[in-house]
Image 1 (spheres, rainbow, N blue to C red):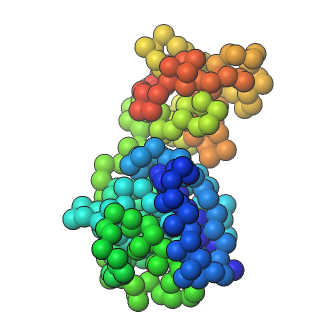
Image 2 (spheres, helix red, strand yellow; image 1 turned 135 degrees about the vertical axis):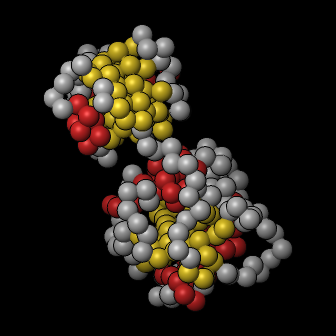
Length: 261
């Protein structure tokens, strides 16, 4: 049985998600649909890419991932199907794939040429992506539903921190459900620049400072702030049993500086 995952900004209040799932099951019922998230902020491709990036490798090879965020077809937003890292991804080439697959190259990229059966042009996940996913799930090839292209429409990649000899300057790229502020600074980058030196992690108006990396939350007292590398090896600023987003005022795109001495 094939697996199709869904990462969308559709929410759960309206009928859109039900229509998408119903379309998949109507075309091919021998699949398992897994909801990754439907609470992505509207049109926030960075947030959607990070959510999927943090978990898609946990799925079996040849899992099919539908990403329905800012997916209306336009000159700038082509619809594509991608095979990369042993998985299939279907979505709009709106910069999301440049973030999602920034650390390895896609093996195949196809511009989809699936004809819509309706004149409703704003629900690509139901009318285009679901058809593509079911075609792949039935064992169909990408060559039958699209034209191969050489690369993505690469847009500025916000996941790369600024690196200097004595400084890493990153940003908050995601606030999770616990209020943890997750950054674009990974463990390898941190250690490569650190070279066993002391450091200060600065944020807010830079009157907030952390001088050590914790390995678990309970290394500090309840309500105390800490810095920790999460399960995906990205630096996050947290509060033990608290909410760093609200209590420290950390928001999406806020600057995080690490100074080395």
